[in-house]
Image (spheres, rainbow, N blue to C red):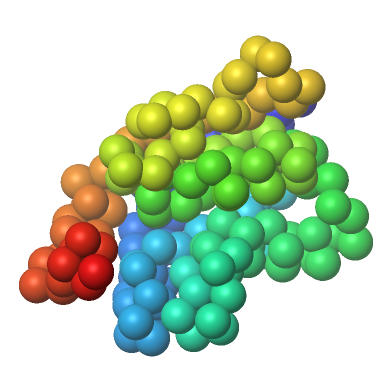
Length: 163
């Protein structure tokens, strides 16, 4: 099911790269989240950053875009042996896409207490009732990832204030 795991330091290096990339999402008004998919040898197959505002597409989450690019690069929807690295804990939609793609491992930075589906609210990727389970490395560069999100949302009206 899984490829040999990378080291925590190599995932930390990748997460810091993703944090820089997430700033590009922020520039277009999107929440600063970025993701990439690595093959078993560590080669980047796909990248994505949130583009919901840019594309006017509710499914344009960083993880989904990275998975789409990786599938196109491999010519296969099955991304067995691959690792998805993302700055924020995936939501339910993204967790479903990760399972559907048969990704072996997910590495994420910040926890998402409001929408997280990889341990915060739900633990979809490791649910024993499903036919595929994913290895999870949580909290890699969590403080830096959380700070990027906190900075983005500081001063913005909350969803309840928009009503």
